[in-house]
Length: 626
Image 1 (spheres, rainbow, N blue to C red):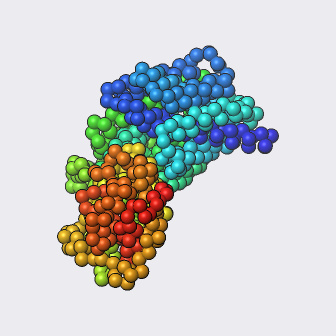
Image 2 (cartoon, rainbow, N blue to C red; image 1 turned 120 degrees about the vertical axis):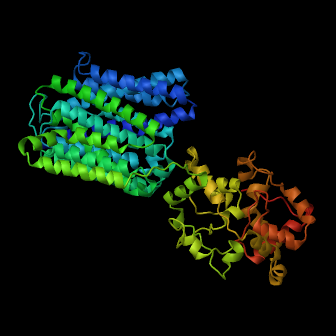
Image 3 (cartoon, rainbow, N blue to C red; image 1 turned 180 degrees about the vertical axis):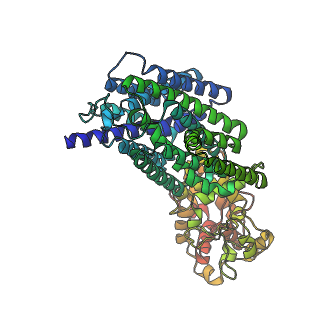
């Protein structure tokens, strides 16, 4: 019996995780991203999302009322099958009409699956550890969705993952547990249905508004969901908060759990009004979301005062239809129309969540009225003396790109400080005053240099070169250990990062050009120049752009300012240049084009490359491309 109960509990954990991952990573992310790829936006997007809400509301209410597939196992499998089909349909090139149908299927599948699951949850979790299973399932789902490789996957991969998980859910052995029946239930804590409905609606409203604002405000998104560090932290916070919620609910602290969820979400919504506090907000938001999410899943089976499965099902339908779908739509609308969550609304949501407890206090302890009024008075004075600051000025692409630079951890490998009186000055210069660097918030000096210094990279590299290097570093820079950041170009983060890097150029541009113009390889380097070594250097560093089949040349053929000359053309150009000028171009690049410099090559390497380029075409075979 103990083994059966244990197995049953883990099935419940898996089912909750499957449904939540489907909702979070697919219905909220991948489906919308896929619509963007297909060019479905504006009014058409509103129609599509309205279809999803209609399916969700309709079938949340109908599921506990119809007799078709009355067996909970069969009904759950039917809901998962619809959900899987909707996810896989997203992989097709949808028209607007098909997108509407697909959205309706997503809402329908979620309505059937969620209401069936939460109504009969004890069938798969058992009674004794049921709420703990809810906490684990919810926490695992949020953690999975925040794993960087999942969060940053393409919409198609996320849709395929969601559909595959639904198929696995269908294939699971879903026979009812022998540990509990549908009708008998041991109550930990009862929350009146109306109180639960209003509380969940208020919390979901707050959550959805904050979620939409973060998703559509780059300065906030960069501080919460961009970069592996943020994602791992969010996943950990979600999991810990979900387990904490299960512990509190299991000990009969349902009201306290909802109150803590409101406090965390309310603080996050207030902090999000100022990007300076976005990191603080990112600590509170996932905690609040997981706290109420566990209660939302656990309520019908474990926290409701309903005495039968039929009543629990109807309550679940209303909570998910009104609190879930309608509350979410209202929150998104608030985010779209206002761009922030008003403090007045946070207060109203607080009243909705705290009202039952406050009424009990006032009724049974009249002396507490004075404390409540005093707290309200202090809150009003603080609000009047310290009004919330709203950011009205839109960030420039370069400013947003700086946030991407920080969130992606670029400082871990690149410095932004040219060391005075060192070879840095010739390669990366000019030197910038430390006072100027320290004035930035935050300073990005960096204490490691696994890659080149980027202080003046906008002076030394064109935007196209920067983009090509971010997409495939090894294709552009020979043996570059830098990982690809191609995923940043699925939205505007990549272009913003390019704009930031291109903006990095100090006031000493002319002095740097003068230093470069005065440079040439040493006489010892010229005397030791080796044309065979020059050919090898060409194959490693130059062929990718100058050979007819070079990787970078082929990939970015239509984007060059000026297509790089082919090898024969390059030799013709080299024959008319002085050795010193050709060496300078190889070392520092050519301004006004996309040609980069090769500042890291030694004098003798530059001299060898120059010597090979100066050889007549007929004397040197065409090198192989790489």
